[in-house]
Image 1 (cartoon, rainbow, N blue to C red):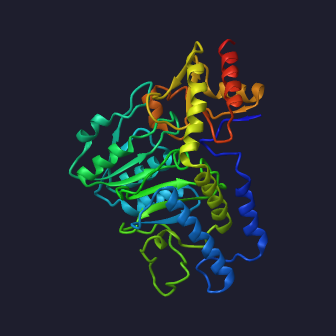
Image 2: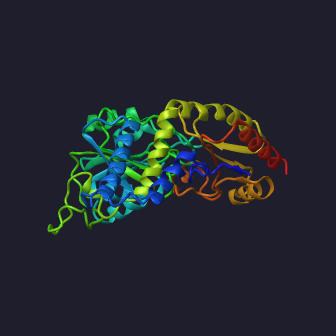
Image 3: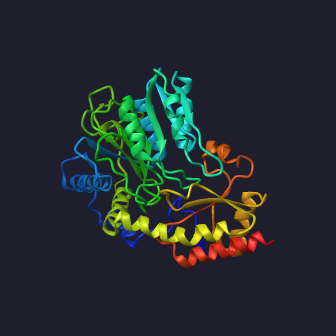
Length: 380
């Protein structure tokens, strides 16, 4: 069997991830972090702090940032978007966004937030950066963007966006779900207000893990309120970062597994992880582009992650994906990938796309098998 749905979640994990989760659950020595001064609680707290330090190392964070863990990037984005953006604010965002960004923004729009969208080209999906200035209004306070499209694999020109936000004094919120662990994400200049990540993709952590990297000086309205283990007599959730995001008990076993995945990436090197994807792309992209009747969407002239969307003639993407599974035992993802606006830009709002996405465990032989399967299907 071949697994090509890594943009959804990585099925193959390093052995160290399962071992870290098992160690926490089986040791009988790990308690509840920040819920006591005894050894069980302190041991749990130490695991969480070590994981936060490793997240900061991964993203090159300076002392102006802190980290909070959540159960995925959807939770992180909801906490950040609804915690930072106020009624009356204007938000500039992109046509690349996942529904984890779009739906919270549409909710905020009903509360008085104005939205403007940067379009993208067909069939490359390249973002129309030249329109950004014209979309600004006096109300614009935030730029919210997906660092890489989970449909095309295109990577945002983050340095350009940072410079734009600095020039116009905008807060910057970045969804790094597809890039964390896959390419270098550098927050060392302090321009990004918050970056939201998930653990179960290119960080190779367990499902149900993720988090927020956020500037300590951000002013956040708490999205979830509850116990924090310290300020028990206060009626409101304390607003200090990172505690404003950390009501309730942490998923210590999951965080330990996530940290093991992050250390795996740090030891391997993010540059090496990116180089592996480039080697796979050198095989996959020209071979698929040469197959008659197949349309491969994306901008292949610049940086990208290992995500590829295509269609075979006018065939429904779900049918092609089913044939790939039933006949070739290849797991791919059909349809819309929870990102409706990019499909309108690409002209695939009806057909959807068949998405192949690769991981560090995808081999060159796997990719060649995928190319051969597509060649076969195109001749049917």
